[in-house]
Image 1 (cartoon, rainbow, N blue to C red):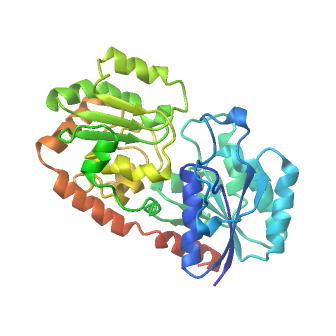
Image 2 (cartoon, rainbow, N blue to C red):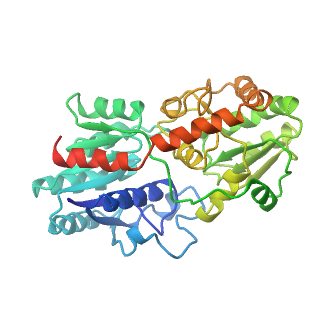
Length: 380
């Protein structure tokens, strides 16, 4: 058993990184470790956050992170040292930082260096070594933090390559597949799910899930929809996610392409209790990403054993094998995307690809994350 401090956002913060931090704590606890989560008192200044709110609507936190101290203010350096001193007082065998964007590199980098001076090793669980939308100082900031860590967990070839480029060839990396999210429970019956979302029972239903930014490629999917509708006249697209940029760009495509009756957009954060409804209603999840590293949405789809169409960017094709758990198409190619969607229904691929998604679900156990952290802490 090791004592491990896990640093990252947890409830009441919302979204994929908070969910992943909570999963990390849960899996390490389940494997017998003494795990101490530490979260943020302020994750983002409100004026920098692109969404409507940073917080979950549910009041009850997961048991694993209930009572986690909220100590780190992302823009107040004295809280970083105070947090590092608290972490050192716990005498942990290692500190695992959830890292996903350079905005947090100054805080994390200073804490990791202070902890190294105290003899406490720092590890990084790296979702993105470099962001999808690049800025001038991104590489320097990420290097400042990642080079202060004694080991790293990566979840795609692309992220592992970025870590190596930033930190040198001798960097210690444990590479795993992104684990399946188990927090969302059982799927909702398809008929019930469609009734709750006011969808026809007999229509082919596509799902685009997650917050909306340029790199997620919703614009590509919307451009493909007229061609999809030619092959599947009854098709419905459900867009479930909050726009983190001007939504008018997407609404104008919907109007210009005459998609008002085809596309339903739930423009807002989808609470955890509602996630099974959206995946239960869908025949096919579409991820038309323009760029990517790995995808938490893919792991939610695997949890619900829902087939996918994804683009061949980043690590998506690594985790969604073509014609096994989904279909892989070139990025930024609306005709190819449309043809893959139509083929899925016309050729009756659902049973085989659903079976493939089930196999991927079994292969992406969260315990592999626990094993990777254990290897790094033990020095193997």
